[in-house]
Every structure is written in C-alpha cells, then in structure tokens.
Image (cartoon, rainbow, N blue to C red; front, side):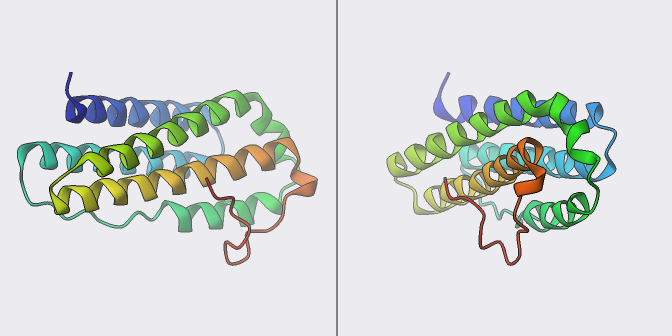
Length: 161
C-alpha cells in the first residue's frame, strides 16, 4: 500500500468513526460536531485522491472550529451535560490520539513531497487535523472537569499539539 492509499484509508476510517460517534450521541450539538468532523475527513479523502491522481485541487476551509466554539458555549450553560458525556470519554480520547497521529503523518508526508502544491495541501490537512485534535482535547477536558473548564473566549486557551 502506498502513502496515498494509506492516507485515503485513514481518512475513510476517521470518517466512519466520527459518524459512529454522531450516531451514538443524543446531544444535537455533539452530533453536529461529529458530523462536521466526518465531513472534513471526507474532504481530506477527496484531496488526497486528487493529489494521487495529479489533479489540481482547491480544498475548502473547515468550519468545525467555529461550530465547536458555539457548542462549548452552549455546553457550559448546561451543568448536566458533562455526566452524559463521560460514557463516551474513551471514544473521544481515542479519536484525539488518531488525530495526533494524523498530524504527524501529514507533516512527514509533506516533508517528503517534492510537488509544491501537494506539499501545501498536505500541510493544510495537517493543520485541520490539529484543529480536530484541539476540539477533542477540549471535549475530553470538559468531560473530565466541567467545573474547571475555561471558556474558549477568542480561542486563546486552545491547547497546541
């Protein structure tokens, strides 16, 4: 399996996992976040497919970070939500690990890529995977200690990978 096929499989696996998380939650905000994450993984798949084919491709910006900000603002107002999230904490932490691995994978792939356009797209995917990681990291933190969770404000406290 070459690097493109591996990346495409990785993105489809991520999409399927986020769709599973979306199906398992009853919280409409979380369902929207996981659906948007799944959409991003599909977009990444299509981008990798285009790079593999040597096609020109323009990747749309992700909106998941803005959606997540709005979700956390709503979650902070509902003190009962965190207890319902705890049953899925392992799933969020697993997804966070997968996103961290994806960041490393795409940064390494970009460093090996000789085509400037492909390199730029791979680095952009890596940046979006960092956003995914940050969302999942903050979701895990909120689930573990909602009383200590800091408002995102202007995203000044989003953890860096």
